[in-house]
Image 1 (cartoon, helix red, strand yellow):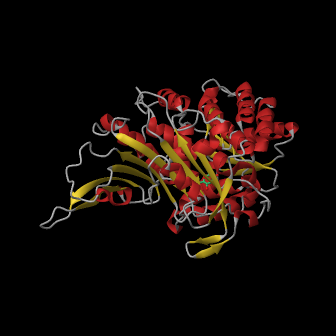
Image 2 (cartoon, protein in one colour; image 1 turned 90 degrees about the vertical axis):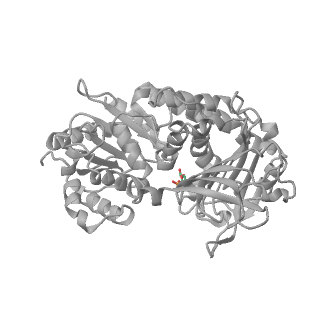
Image 3 (cartoon, protein in one colour; image 1 turned 135 degrees about the vertical axis):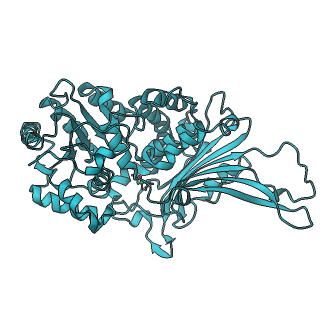
Length: 513
Ligand code: BG6
């Protein structure tokens, strides 16, 4: 085996820094995430010519597999999920020489010595260097045994002087405050915080990163980005899919743990944070942390005022009949797991006092769309009095996270003609038309960042903790507060009517994305 540059273009690549040579060990390599996301993302890095010389992937897992079988399995995955083109055959041939598989039972501490030995042999042959990146893509129940196993075999600390060991941990990071704290303690008893990368793939989405550019690289938005001009903010993540084949996991998670505790709160923090002094991991994450700390907690006895939860019933989505959540595989027929959540959150700080953030996420809604809508206040004086009030819409800025990525600004305009009539129009930026091509997948960006040692777009331990501090009392209230109920909604609709009432009580309504 030869150490090799995965793509000759690498040397002329325009990224500011190339990652150090390293080996990436994926626990849970036979699982869904590896084939749908990780391998396509890493191959995309090869495509972009940014993988270091000798880069090696070692899949590790209980499923017994030879290197060859693993390679074939990954190739199939790439063809299915990775935009693979026949013209990339040669690139694959080089890439595949760096793919290996080690069968181990990660639950057995004694097996880590074997893993260590095999890694040494592979690294020696590949000249992949001493840097190691562990990726935990297993069910969360395995995190603790793996962390202990790595520490037991002294694989948590780098072998060489300038070498590094890093670990990426997938969500869910705990199921409540206690379990998240316990996991954080375990991780930090073995790794330093700088070695730990808690992934939230929403932070790697192009449009989410662009939110920071939009706010802080333009002078015109920041002066109006506050309670003086903004009426309220709506953050929506709607999915048309149901729980698919993940019923077993989802039953214990629900929309709150699956989407709100992580992705939605991250979107909120980026929307609400103060400008950091520098664009680096500490400053950006410090500012986000201040937002999390300023979110007013919802007490168990008030959950019915500030939260709505729902569960999808049978219905029609995109023209096809779909089952009720309770009829999905792996789901109890008595289930009270929520597939929809709407929250009214308030941020108690100078910038946002009195500006509600309405956040909602649900499965089996009519449309797949994630967006952040900034709704501005009405004009202070109603000059065009003869016009019906509803022809004068509020101004808004909508950041379309996905699909149809872009940003639009809505304002009122005069309808051409002899009469003074008006209607809202939009100024629209679309990634597709401005930049063309494909947007890089979030995992591609995040894996590269980790190899480069940049944790800016990863969640820090303290923010995971404070997110659970916010979410856990809501869960408790859902169980203990008899005014709080779970409401059915027909699949293919925008959630339970109680979610509309949540805004109607404030004289507002949800946007139709
Ligand atoms: C995952 C959740 O984290 O995010 C899934 O576990 C959800 O339930 C998914 O479908 C949504 O991600 P995306 O990138 O498709 O919006």
